Image (tube, rainbow, N blue to C red; front, side, top):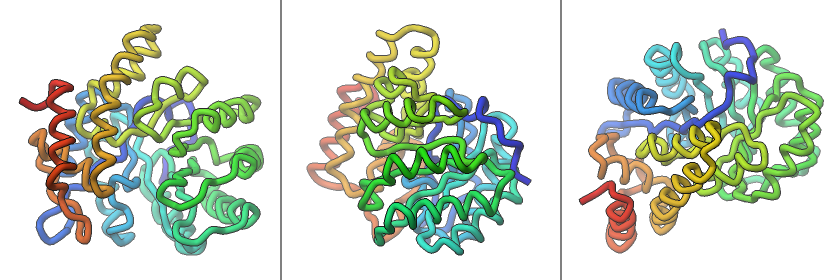
Length: 303
């Protein structure tokens, strides 16, 4: 069963772990476990299984649950493990949440439905139905307007936070620092954890009260990315800002590539052997790849 709800454990620098696959696109569980162990050893505070950069949209439920169990077996006694849910249909999201809560996960993270655009009231009902189906499991709302095509309205998030006891946080990938501030301000009367979901604004998010971040680049550069959080918590604000500024050109260089290829491409350039992205996503080539290599060299990560 899922672990008891504990907001104090769900903070820090998490990463949506890359999902290593073989040439046929099957999840390589041995490499997944190896990668998880390595990044936890190098400072990552938590794992999000099957977030956007984990390519959740490429796998069926059985594959994701099997891989999540492997992650729990490998690092679940060291750091929290969240499980991502991205189904569009409410009933399918509920069914997957119920299966996930049978594992020793620390929380689920639920993305707003992609492709369609429900009304604010329909979104409220969608998230509430999932939360109500697994009342003993912590739940994060995952707001990713760039990928879903629209934002989860602030009023909906705040309402859910106050109505559903197990909705205890949000991963906000809007990149909008005002949105982050308002989430912190409007939930300051309850125990609600705001996580930044954009790698380039971890430092400013922490400055306005976020308790952590979920960063894909922590798969590749964990010491640098975790340094933003760790130095901030230690009171070394200049050091935290310096790490953020060192990361930003590297992360921004990925924007010229096809999503989500860039994160795996960078990891493979660093010798991590996470395998290819899953078709139809193909590896980055040409000017986009050279731009990523240039940023990594200037950051001191490639010769």
